[in-house]
Image (cartoon, rainbow, N blue to C red; front, side, top):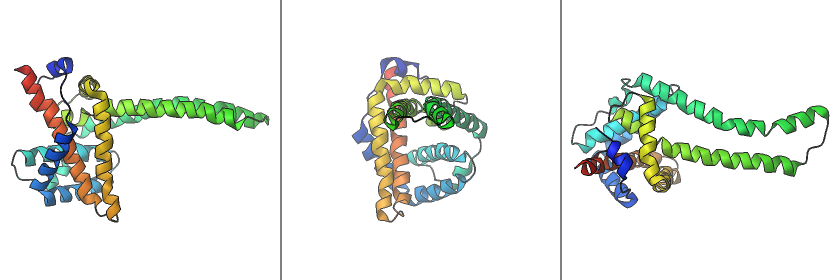
Length: 229
């Protein structure tokens, strides 16, 4: 599938529509989605395999959306193992690079402690506070830029992390604020299950994933095809 047109011409991002259609998708096989969530949690015990399980979950959403039989065992599909391993390394590298300024801001405290000098806490906290705020802002920007990476890999079979990230950023920046807001809303929906003694998470987590899948489908497939007409 060619995504060049949508990266240049843009698209609509309808949060209300995605929530509604995501809920309808979840109802198609609620039991299967809940079982897949349990298995995904089990798979997440293996280092870095949590993001692979999530990618496989999006593929399961596509199967249910197309009327195919849901196989919860699809969560354990390791077809994209190496792609997600490289993706995981990229995520770790980004986080470590973003942490460098925060670590640098601690140097005056370390030096002052070794020399027995007194360092004004207000100055220290102010300096660290600025870096922490910038760190959070950069982290938010990167989270939005990575928004479409997993569906591009798992659903649309792009096997280059570099290409998937490049496409994801090119698409996401067209609706940066809406995607950020949507991510926050879906996160709140997914966490609502905590209110039911935690057990509700087995309903709200897969519901949140279904909602995100619908947004991927609409942007990467439905609207992309319309732009190309």
